[in-house]
Amino acid sequence: MVSISPRMRDSLDYEDPDATDPRMEWGFRSLTLSSSGYEDHDLIEDDRRPFSASPEPSASRRRRRQRQNEADLDYIRPFEYETVADGDLFRLAVLKPGVGAQLIEIELIWEKTKAPRRDYKCLSYCWQTTVQDAVILVEGRRFEVTSNLLSALRSIRKRRVKTLIWIDQICINQEDFAERGHQVSIMKHIYSRARTVVVRCIFLRVWRMGHY
Image 1 (cartoon, rainbow, N blue to C red):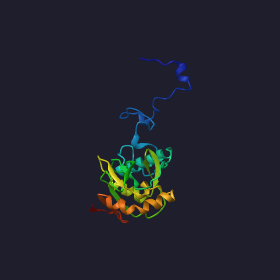
Image 2 (image 1 turned 60 degrees about the vertical axis):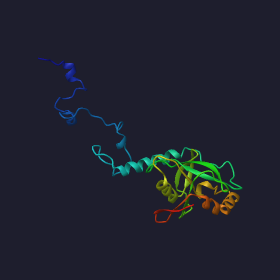
Image 3 (image 1 turned 90 degrees about the horizontal axis):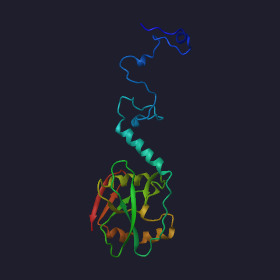
Image 4 (image 1 turned 90 degrees about the vertical axis):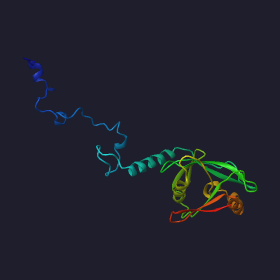
């Protein structure tokens, strides 16, 4: 038989054994109010988030990952063109491989219209708007593009190999009016030297046209 000291019984910290938390009864191994360790169920401002016992829908997970990627880009310095495209020179975009909503990453290289050394594609598409409300990475820097171009890049991008493509919105410095005018004047040569022209219509279907 175990006796209890009167001092312990009279203590303000003493709790009647019958007044226990029902969550600590049989069937509960532990009790925690922390959300750490549950990546898919962080406390977010979304009334439609799933219960902790249910997996998060993949579409919601992709949207959340995309929002996080865009938020991370806010801290990256914007891209700046350091050279001018003139003469018979033009830039080509090297679209890095990826899938789905993964961040679009591009490197820029130089090519010549007179004697191009590489096989490349050209993208022909409708801007729809001049509002650049989407973000990609160019040379590791933040680069804003239209949402229509972002959608086109995702559809063109390969899963495992790089894609070499000319895109006016990226390969031409749109803020440099002299360069833009010159590049427009040689655009016919850029297109005629391309191996493939990818035409993306306003209703988001893609065709491959012409092999030169």
